[in-house]
Image (cartoon, rainbow, N blue to C red):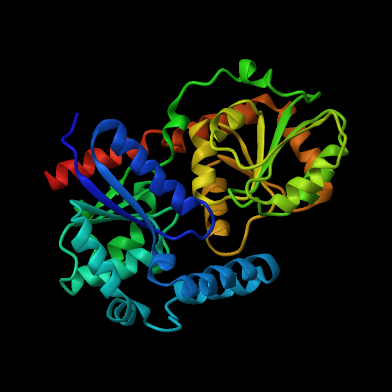
Length: 369
């Protein structure tokens, strides 16, 4: 057991992944260092509620209605065409409230799980406004330049083969810790798929899961409709916080379909399924990999998800289906090809890091102590 410490975690509630990593790190700390104090901050909302509505609202609307615009901006910034050099300006304009929080909470360690909070706190560290150990968790399978700040003491990333952007930016090798993407402790448990499957009233085989991250994005209604046209499948849909999708699918009276909303214990549901159809969000993909499940990518959002998809495909841990019309055919071909299916499972287990949060705290304590 480690002695109790105080930790501030700065996330941003855009999607569910960044908050999930924050929760995973807090959960692990409290399990291994009882008595520790952890406070998770939704950074933009904390600074200004109106700013949060504008930023988060604009981002979500762009992803829903004009995703190519997001993809274009993502590529431009990555190629070096910064729209505005934000970090120094933001640190000057927004640091006062953050400094007050740090002074009141007196953390031993500060963690960031989003590029915005990473740049903001990193610049504040460079300006001498942040004294505690400052660490950042990159939540994707690649590193976009917006994550990079010279003020970060330790960077936690998925694996050594994605570290190049950090090294090129002058971040020292010893500051880079390739431990995996932290996910909740439930994903390190041993689940009996057959026992879990008894809770489903669905008929069919294989059991195909459809999910779109915590927000339930990614053409899930269209995908589900297509899968239900194949009589052999049992379909498990996790709608997440997408209440509109849940209500629409709830109206269907189909013995093949088992519907969930937002589930805290998502690991046991994933473990009970054979094939997972999902968009490749960083944390969602990390959860699927940790359970050794084959990932079938149909609807990847431009930007970070396209990059995640490329990484997972190159490592043979996923399969991409580009056209809805062939989705059922491709799934059946995969299911009937046990050699390829087992290879994907093996590659998923290799890439998966169910103990990433434990490894991360080990590195933090070694550096901080």
